[in-house]
Image 1 (spheres, one colour):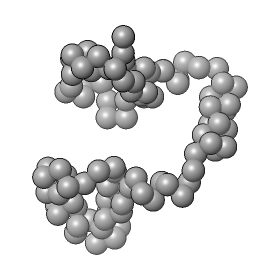
Image 2 (cartoon, helix red, strand yellow; image 1 turned 90 degrees about the vertical axis):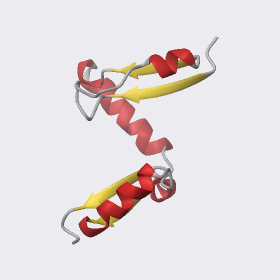
Image 3 (cartoon, rainbow, N blue to C red; image 1 turned 120 degrees about the vertical axis):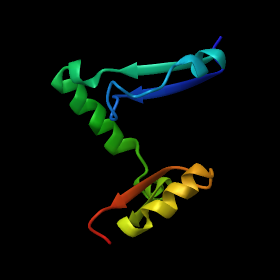
Image 4 (cartoon, rainbow, N blue to C red; image 1 turned 30 degrees about the vertical axis):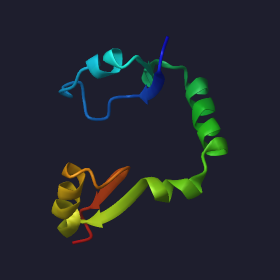
Length: 95
């Protein structure tokens, strides 16, 4: 019996990502994934359309924050200290 589910699509970092699925296995979490590259074009279009229809765009601003290049080190320290949740987007043109 699974105690949780994680859905993943793609591996943006690359195949050399130094991680393991052991924490998922040990905690009874099912890791669900799809290789979207091998899906037919029509199915990919349908998936993107579902995202467009069902994703609440107002919540995206709650999941990410932008920082300028000069704020990247401070944001990295906050990440290490566990003070940031979500994504941090570093705008390298905003120095």
